[in-house]
Length: 91
Ligand code: SF4
Image 1 (tube, rainbow, N blue to C red):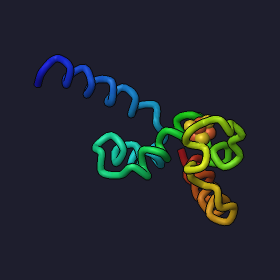
Image 2 (image 1 turned 180 degrees about the horizontal axis):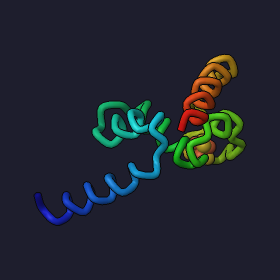
Image 3 (image 1 turned 45 degrees about the vertical axis):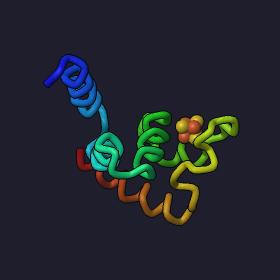
């Protein structure tokens, strides 16, 4: 593994340690370049410290991702938030 690649993997491994388990799959899909949708989700979640509700409520209208941000559907967001809250309570 070349130095750049090794450094990249070290950064990814270190960053994965701070991501809540519920979002690791999204992050991994983005990092492995298998999903652009996952990349936007991961970036918005990262931007809001992994708070889905905050992504939905985001008011940074100047952000180029704003129109594409996930969790804009209130029903979906509530359903997911309940699931996330239950999961977080178990941790
Ligand atoms: S749309 Fe909002 S939550 Fe997503 S990256 Fe931009 S500022 Fe952050």
